[in-house]
Amino acid sequence: MIRFLARAAALAIAALILFALQQTTPGYSEITGPITQRGVAGTAITGRGFTLRVEKVVLAERLRWQAFGRSYDRDTGGLWAVAVVEAEGTPATTALSGATWLAASGLRFEASQRAESARGFLRGKRLEPGLPQRGLLIFEIGRDAARRGALLVSEARWPRLDTQLRIALPDDRIEQAETLDLDTLK
Image (cartoon, rainbow, N blue to C red):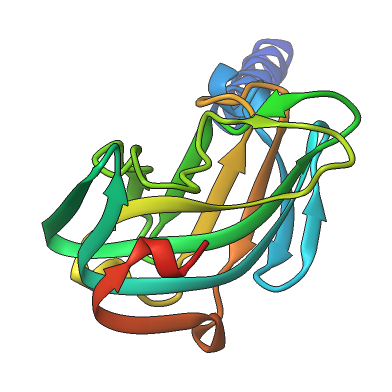
């Protein structure tokens, strides 16, 4: 009888250990997810294929710019967040396809396509080694997502086992404007 109880106890302990291992093992998306490089706005952060420095972020109610011989004027239900950045491909030509605004609450806002005709729009454009390029990453964000956010920037839109820069945006790097003329930023 004692032998039976000892075996049952050993089996129960093994089952508990296996259950604990199963519950604490990271999932596939976590294992193959992005490799995060952390930095702060104002400093250059280097990933596997590019270097990026966020100069400042301007929050605005409206955007205005000139392109293709006409004037564009856009508003949004929240705020426009325009990040002025300098980027460079290293060691080869690349493009930044992944750009996300990460709010302090965890909400994510992908880069907006509504202003891609603006001069300096950087998402998806070629970055050459040795030729730093100043440009804009433009987001439409909720009003409550404007402070204590971060930018997530990568070569791929959904990076897997590749670098993703996570750039903290301190309040001293964030400016406000009611209407922002994008042609004055470049």
